[in-house]
Each structure stands twice: as C-alpha cells, then as structure tokens.
Length: 343
Image 1 (spheres, rainbow, N blue to C red):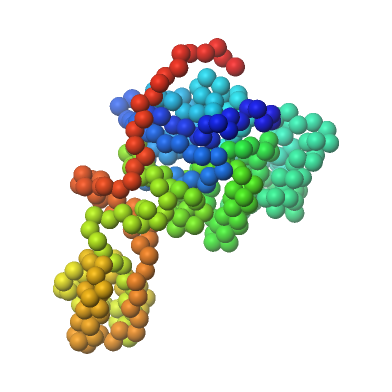
Image 2 (cartoon, rainbow, N blue to C red):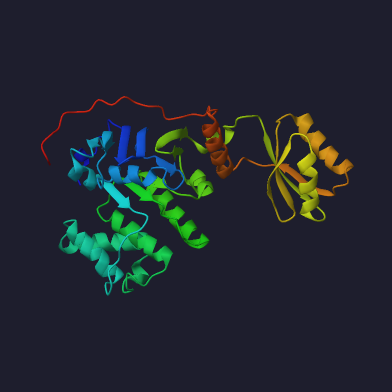
C-alpha cells in the first residue's frame, strides 16, 4: 500500500448527511460524523438502528441513497478500490471453508490480495503470530471456538496491513477470556496508530477501549462524545448509590419504593442500586440517615459512576420525550461532487 493513498490532511472517516433506504424503511437517515486518524471510536445502537448499514457503506459493500462517505480522504462510491486498500473489514459473521485449515484459509486470502512468494509467507506468519493463531495453523477453519474464529476473522482483515479498521460486533458471543484477549489486540492496533471504528452491545468495554462514542438511534446520530460526557448527560441532577444491607434485599427495595427522591435501578445480591434525584451532599446524607432510623442494617453505602448502559437507556427515553439536550454530532449539508469515471 502506498502512503500517498492515505490523505492525512482529511479525517480518517468522514460521513456527511448519509442516507440509505430500503423501500419505505430509512435504515440510515441523515448521519454525519468524522473520525480523526489514530482514534478508536465505539459505534453504539440497538439492533436495527443503522450501525451495520453505515459500516457496510464505509466498507464499499453497499451504496448510499444520498450523502457522502469518505475513507482515508477517498469517496467510497467514486474510489472503492482505493478505499479497500486502506480498509480492513471485520463483519459480525463470515464464512469459513470446509476442509480448509487456518493456514490455508489465510494463504488463500493473501494470494487474493496479491502477495507472492516469500513476502506472502512472511505476512501470513506475522498475522498469525499477532492473533495467536500459529498454534492453530493446522486446525480446520470451520472447527474452532467462537473466540478462535473471531481471531481468524481479524487476521484476514489485517493481511494487507490496513490503516483503518471497521469492526462490526467483534465481541458478540465471546466468553470473558476471549473478550479480554480481543480487547488487548484492539489496544495494540490503536497504539500502532490504526484508526478503528467498532460496534458492540457491551457498552462498558467500549467505554474502556474507545476515545469517543457514537450513538445512533433510528438511523440518526444522537450523541458523539467521550464516555464521560455520556454518563454526565441526564435530564435531572441525580446520584447513583450502591447500598448493601444485612438481611433480605427485599427490605431495602420495599423501603425505597416509598422514600422521597429515591428510585430502584436494580436489585443486587445484598441490596440494590438506587437513583437519588439529587447531587446535594445533605440529601444523600439524609437518605442514609432515614435508612438507619427506619431499621435497615446498612453495611455499605457508596456512590458509583453512572453506567453507560443506564446513560444510553436514559438518553433514548429523553429522545422519545423530545427532551434530550446532550452533545450530538450535528448535521452537515453535503456538497455532492459530480460523477467520476470508474477506478
């Protein structure tokens, strides 16, 4: 890949007023955002929100109905070949071949990418070492665990050493150990300066891995910022506290249902997570005092950071009510260039 193909004067990914309709369904409805080189960005949204469609357009696997999408400074519609040389695509599911080993699988794709001779052997070995597939070289590619299969998919995406990676739900279905390993590989790639757009339903892990988060709902970007700004966004000032008691958690739940300014978020093994609709120290102290006066044997009472899952659900509720005031990506009016000859 020639370094000249990557236009560093522009963001790694630019999307302007992107739209994609399937009949009456507006899968992507005016999406706009940009991602700087070397960033790791989480793409978050419910099933059907438009994540995969947006990613497929960026990967040159689908065409937008209107709007602009650029990867590495190149329009994905006008210059798909240039985009593909810069881009590594890791889909949420992919096919393997019966009776083909891991080594044969990667060799097939390395040949398809134009690698030859010693260079091909070296590149395959580099990828296998990085993804820890070398011990599995002779394993049939369709007879591996989910985690091993995802590492094979990542290896395939990395064969041509792309500068930009798009990963659609790479952690879906992985066990905790495999998720930790995948997260480690992503951080190594980020440290090497790769630009990564990654979608996932595991919001807590995205918050740890990503520099910024893109939230999409019903085909529109509704938030673009870091995890901290997301957890700060709330319709009313509130504090989340984790409370543990000696005795049945049901007693705490029953107490919280009638307490002023207190709502139950969820029950825990020894108590509950509560939402107190205030950030005032006196209110928090007063709530704890009432618990003790009312006979609850409180063994632990501490604030906790607002979880991304709670912030996301809260944000969607605010959007439905028309009261969301968080940071959004905004809408950009595109300047559509004239059609250019195929590349």
